[in-house]
Amino acid sequence: MSHDEIQQQASTPEAIAQIPVNRGSKLLILSASSGSGHTRAGEALEAAAAYFPGISSVRHIDVLDYGSALLGELYAELYKQMVSKTPSLWGWWYDKSDTPWKGEHFRVAMERSQMQPLMECLRAEAPDITICTHFLASDIVSYMLQHEQLSTRHAVVVTDLHVHALWLCHQFERYFVATDESSYYLRQIGFPDDRITVTGIPIHPAFSKNMDREALQRKFDVSPSMPVVLLSAGTFGMESSLAAIRALIQMKQPAQIVSLCGKNEELLAKVVQATEAAPPHLKFKALPYSTDMHEWMAISDLLIGKPGGLTLSEAMASTLPMILLNPIPGQEEINAASLLEEGVAVSPTDVVTLPYKVDLLLQEPQRLAGMRNRMKQLAQPRAAYTILETLLSTQPEC
Image 1: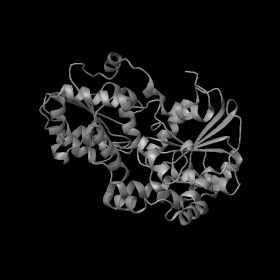
Image 2: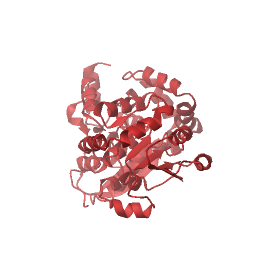
Image 3: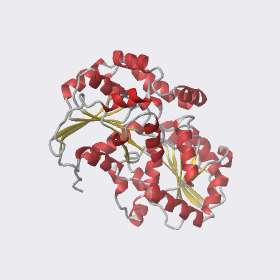
Image 4: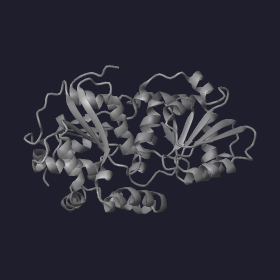
């Protein structure tokens, strides 16, 4: 598809409803539970929407609840299995499929055949504004706009630092992206500049609020005299974090190590067992899935984890330097490269050298402070508000 064709279709105004945006807008947020980041971005927008009187109603739905079992297997279960069991295969496919508009017609036709309930839901909801935090949702909305089956203001929120080809659609009002480089990329492939806004990735409004570090230390029974190292296994509790825990027992520097094990009770039990004989200068705490991530990040000195788009955005907002552990080939490797380039993260060559990296940083408080300062410059904790402000042309009441 040529540059002119892309721009013409992306800019077509006929399918975009000209709805008054200053009051009474019905907002529909579409995410997908393929990984946790898309859903968390949707939840962030939903939480931010509560502060905008111009929104008459807001609903957040998981589009995989409105698709066939086959589609759920492809987009949720297969993804989860690939990134945990065969990450190199996932990385190969990610790179192979990252060509703008390649295979688009077949993909959208397949999605459409499997998502008739979603299309019926969209017609019934008749939202004034639709915000998609997953490309599957944006494909369907774009198709319906293109064929005049829906009238809505369609916004696409990209939840990684790179705009993969799967995120591209023809009918939209605005793209919200994480970085200036992503904006540049979209312009280079023909997307109009006036429909691209750099906001960062939306994270929960809790990350934009000031927190009392001393009060939180008391709440979580954390000593203020020892650094806190936070290890996140992700929402699903990645088993690879157990190897990290076993490695961290070799640390020389005193530290409090908090392992968040996600929704994986078996992993939680294994972490508790693995740390029973830890040396006295290391204090381990293992916890299940927590909704207090913003509070844990606020009192931590280092975050060990995978560089998903939401996780790195939350870490930026918390000015919490990262140690990147086993990034998934594809989107997470691109995210990792960006963090390393900005000097706000380090990456061990192997999990075996993880304690060396942690000890090194804990012995260099000036380096840690420099990383925090850079994160503060890069952070965009109000991304969710900015997205809604842009669409509604109004300020939140908060």
